[in-house]
Structures are given as structure tokens and as C-alpha cells.
Image (cartoon, rainbow, N blue to C red; front, top):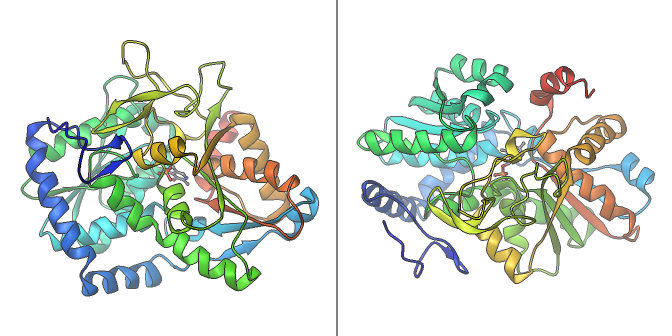
Length: 394
Ligand SMILES: *Cc1c(COP(=O)(O)O)cnc(C)c1O
């Protein structure tokens, strides 16, 4: 175990690398490779080319005129990560790490997935870069997200069911880490959010910063001012930190929105900042949902992508310093925002993104008409329609 909490990879008292001995060397190798390639102009040029010509970046900044008129407050804009290839921001990180794996001479990608969005993004990048690919997915999630399992297999990936515990994302991460430890020679572990041991939280954040960097230029051009407020949903925290990070030094308010599930009192939620406490989960010290004995609690959310007991460690620092506010939206609030955006703007958002949207609509109301609020639309909702129809919710 490397329990050191001083030095790199620490966000206030959070982060670090709480790992078994076997992963020490591969993480050192990853740190060195990332440090070297992230500073390499050729790597950056290749990545930018892929983001532009393969994923379709820059993604648009869309003004919601009907929604703004309906709510009657601040101007509501969406950063359209849903328009990326494969339908969410996950591809930004998958392309970055996939290219890094290739440069490191690896021939196989290993990943976990919850709803399947990260698995699909990783399988896509593996096909593009001619790498083998294995994706671990909880057996329960495989049943809930059948179409994404088919998609990954069609793309050439092997999908393996994680059958321990609750058979969801946490168990899939454990299996993917174990696979990595057993296949270090040829395998690159492609983690899907700003989570896990150092250097993953920093590396994933840097690959997602493209969201905030583009946004800053776009909003200055559209409005001649910085926005007053940024809003993003927080699962592991990668779309939120990617949007927020370039604005941290600016006078811009930010809100991260977690999954409130059926309400905090019900215990059926995934709000690590309302009911969680500091602890170690899957390699990092962060806010987690745990019982008094430190056993990880079951989480609940209508959106599989926000349904995880831990959160990216950098968000813990931003929470404790008060630089970013964290709140939650319930399943019902998210569903109502989901329908509203569909009907007022012709955009069907992912259920994850709908949490951010619910808070955006709430805040916009009490802001002035010359103020600007930008919601990160992390993904599109096509993937959610089956489950919503089966649940009788639409
Ligand atoms: C995975 C996912 C999320 C949650 O992940 P973060 O790392 O918190 O961004 C949010 N929205 C969509 C569409 C996703 O696929």
C-alpha cells in the first residue's frame, strides 16, 4: 500500500493512491508516460485532430430561447456534449487515454462501465486504434442496458459480467482493476471518470478540460461576458470538473448536482456530499456513502451514470473550500426536466444531464434577464428511453 498523502495527486486532504503493491509499478509507468506525452506537441496535435474530425468538436453552445422565455429569468445555454460521437463527453477521455495506450505500446484496453456509455466509448476507440478491448459490466447493469452491451460487442469488444456484490459499477471497477494487475504487459486500464488512484483523477480531468476551454471562448463570443453560473451533474465528476476547471480563477459561480434519488431521507440516493463522509474507495480518499463500519452502502438513482458510492477527489477539495456548491436533484425532478427540454427545445437529454438541467431551471428563475447560466448537457437521452418506457415513466 502506498498511503502517502503528501506530494502529487492530492486535492487538499483527498486523492492519493491507495493501492495494492502490484499496481505500484504500473501506475509509476503511467505517470511517467502521461507526463511525457501530455507535453508532446505531436501527441496533442493527434488528439486534437481526433477530437475535431472523429468526435465532432468543438461541440456547440446552444441558447435555449423557448425555455428561457418559459422560465423568465437568466439566459439559459447548453454546452452540447450530447453531440459528441457516441453521445456523451466520455469520448473526450477515451480518445485521450486510448492514444496514450497506443503510444505506450499497449495492445489491449481494459475498462469498466456502469450504464455502458464509457464502455461504448472505449470499445469505439479500441476499434479506431486497432486495440483489443475487454469491458467489465455489472450483471444487473447488463440487463438494464441491453442495447449498450450489443453495441460494445458489435464494436468488437469482449463484455464480461461482474457478478460480485450488487453487480453494478463498483464491482465492475474491481474486476477491471484485477484484470489490469494480471495483464500488465500488454494491457492499459482505461478508467472512465475523474476517480481512482493518482494519476487518473488529474489525467481524466485534463482530457475533459476541453469542455470548459471551448465554452469560455464560445460564451465570450455569444454574450461578451463570462457566465454568472455553471451547472453540471456529478457522478464520478468528470464532465463537471472538465467544465469547471478552466473557470476556477474567474468570478463565476458553479454548482455540481448529484443524484438525489428518492430523497436524502429515504436513504435511496447517491449524494456523497449529503450523507457521505471521507473514506477510501477504489484507490482514492474521497467522500463516500458508507455505514458506521465503513461498509459501502447501496446507492440509487434513476440514472445509472450517477449511481456510484464515491466521487472524484478534486470535487471534495472544491466542496470543502466552498469554491463549488453541491446540491442534488431527485429522480422526479430530473424526469420533469428531461421532459421539459424535450418539449421546449427538441433536445432529449440523458437522465444524468437532466439532474443538472433541473437545478438550472430552478436557479434561472431567480436570476436577472441579462445574466447567463450554462448547463453542461453531458449526454443524449436515447439510451434511457427503453428503461423509461418499461418503467411506465414516459
Ligand atoms: C457517465 C456519465 C455521467 C457521469 O459521469 P461523470 O464522470 O460524473 O461525468 C454523466 N452524464 C452522462 C451522459 C454520462 O454518460
